[in-house]
Image (spheres, one colour):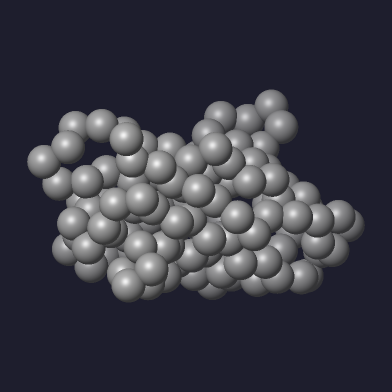
Length: 117
């Protein structure tokens, strides 16, 4: 069973930064796509940032220019660097991944990010 373990969430003031990490128990070199979603209070889960096997990255309009997704294949870890945080970024952030030749949809347990004004 593949596991995704997030870390790095916390409480930060507006304008601050956090870096989230998602460590996978399977080699991420063989993923189809991997990324971060978030779900704020009363909101639906939404895509924040994602990279695909082809090398492309996608960002939600609301985070473009502030968030950066990156990977370390040696550590099987994906990161989300979040700068210039806003109270609207407050949410539980989830790691998500799909691997080649595996139809399963994998999710981490989530990590809370709270941005105070």
